[in-house]
Length: 467
Image 1 (cartoon, rainbow, N blue to C red):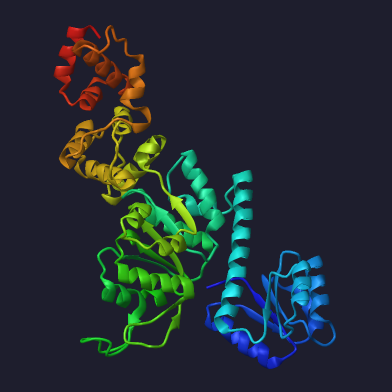
Image 2: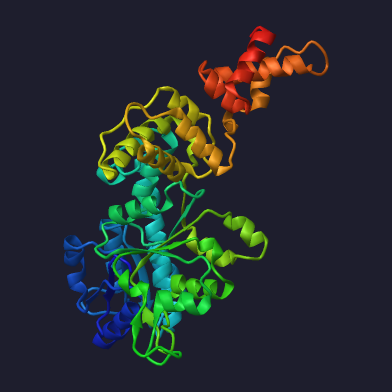
């Protein structure tokens, strides 16, 4: 899949036919051919072309003269000279005129394809850097509506939106990382929508798929490939043709499956089970994981070459505890969704709920917050959503509320008035109570939850310590 056009210019029709077929069979679908060199400049005025493959010895206008004109009027177009002239001086002259490469006919197929793909990749990277630079400078989203499913006012998330929009139209893979529940698939769908691809968005969880199942799921099989394969079956790669294929939990992919995925990315080809004939992929590949791929590489569980192929672009989504300012917005959104789903009137909630949840570290991230609110609304009868239902949810999860790692106890302890070299129990207790009340905005019930004691126990300590 490549939207950039390649133009072949040669006076020999057979050369145009054979090399255009080579490019198309290698996944470069948009190939134009021109046999008369006089038609090149008018054509460039009408159509966008990324790469020109240019012969030197042609009637009417020689290749070197045409190269000079192209670089003067269309300097952004890359030109590869492909000629039977095996002359070092001529090659040097072409490179001085701005040629990207110099190939001598007959060119071996793999070298020819590799040269064109490398040139297209450099053009793509150049365009993406330019687009990203512009996004950073103006901070404006052209497709803002596509990002509305993500509820956020966080600056990091807004920067991610700009990056996503800049890379969405690239045909290179994108690796999306982040903890469980941060919204990796949601961002993947947004990338697909912004890309403008006409095909479908097809997500598949590859965790636990051994090689035969992985190959069958993605690439399909031919009749008789194995016992029970009584007819041909198309894989998901076909369903995603012209669209996007998301491989979720890529960090759990088996070593054999990793090799097949690497071939798919490098050559844009794959083999259905039971077939010796390669087929071409026209799907955009996205991958996501909650694992540290670099750590998996160091442990020998993930291929380094596959990692660099997958992470041409990398989007890391921060956990909810690093964007707590989004919690009030998410509470409102999820309460409305939960009430609508349960066909109930939207309930109110106590203002202390925001304080309570802002002091919880949400190991399950946005997904956990959504589940928590849906559970509370489902149990709700009338009046205001009770804080107790949220406390009970956290308790039943078996997870204690933790302090914000950005504002750790060690940072807060700098203000602790220590009378000796080591704080006394009373000093430490007083400090913890004051810190908990501060983070709970004075709410004793929430402060007690942070301290892991009952409200009555907190009251006794407040009276005893005179806090």
